[in-house]
Length: 64
Image (tube, rainbow, N blue to C red):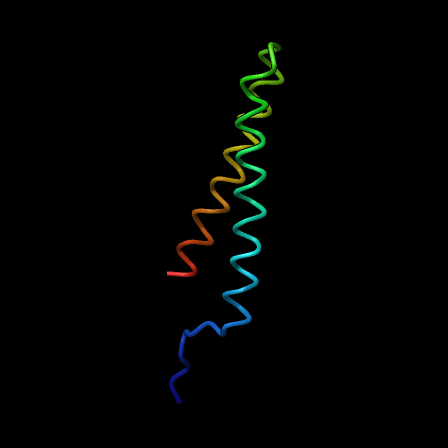
């Protein structure tokens, strides 16, 4: 029997929530990246923003 790779409405809703959480975090980190003068802190903030951006991209791939 062939198994479909379909997402339920509940799955899509949950993925949308996760996407929005990560997008909000990404936007916040990008904002604070410009507000901080310390280069080490900027690097950490930038890396964390990239982590959330990558999560958003993965979620979009799953959602198709």
